[in-house]
Image (cartoon, rainbow, N blue to C red):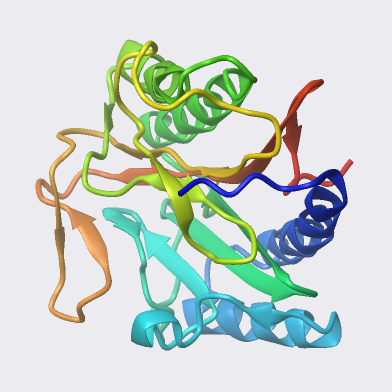
Amino acid sequence: MVILKLPEEIEKARASNKIVAEILNKIKEKVKPGIKTKDLNKLAEEIADKRGARPAFKGYRGFPYALCTSVNEEVVHGMPSDRVLVEGDIIGLDFGIYYKGFFGDAAVTLPVGKISHNAARLIEATKKSLHEGIAQARTGNRLGAISAAVQNTVEASGFSVVRDYVGHGIGKNLHEDPQIPNFGKKDRGIELKSGMILAIEPMVNEKDYKVKVLQDGWTVVTVDGGLSAHFEHTVAITDDGPYILSEIN
C-alpha cells in the first residue's frame, strides 16, 4: 500500500534527507587515493551522531555498517573495509538516516583521482538518468514514466540498467511501496499522486546488466566484471512538480 504524506510530513522528510546530503558532501571531500573505505564509514557515523540522527542501514537485516561503499564492479551494498582506494577507481556511496520520525536516503558515485574516459561517461550517464527520471515524477504520470526515462537515457549512452535491484517508496519506513524499477514502459504502473515520496536510484552497468551477490551475502557485483555506477535522490511528488528532498539548495 502506497502511503501518501501530508505537506508537514514532507518537510520532516526534507529535514532528514538534508542531513543525508550534508553528510555525503562531507564524505565526498575525503574521497581520494590512499583513503580506506572503512574510514569513510567512520566519518559518516560520526557526523550522523553529532546531528542526532541514526544511520539507517546499520543493523538493517543484519548489515553491519552505516555506509555502503561500492567500488568499481561493485553495484550496491559494498561493505567498508581496509580496502585502500587507488587512482582510477570509482566508488558508489549510499547512505541513509532516521531523524525525528522519517528516513532519508541518497547515493552518489565519485571518481577517485583521474579515471578513464568510459568510467566518466558511465558516471555522467547514470547521473543524467536519475534527473531524467525525477523529471517524470509528476502527478498524473504512471510510475513507468520514471522507469522508462531512466532506461532510455542509459541505453542511449550504450550502458545497461540493473534489473534485480530497484528504487522504493520511503517515509516513516526505509522501504515502502511502490517499488521503482529502472526499466519499463511509460504507460505502465500505478498513477503518481501528490504526497508520494520516492527514492529513485538508477544502478547502471558498463556492460551487461546481470549481477550476482558475493559470499559475504551483501556485496552485489557485475557478473562480467564491468564497472557500475549508482545515483539516488529522495523525491516528493507535489502539485507543483518534483521536490528533491536530498538536495542542498
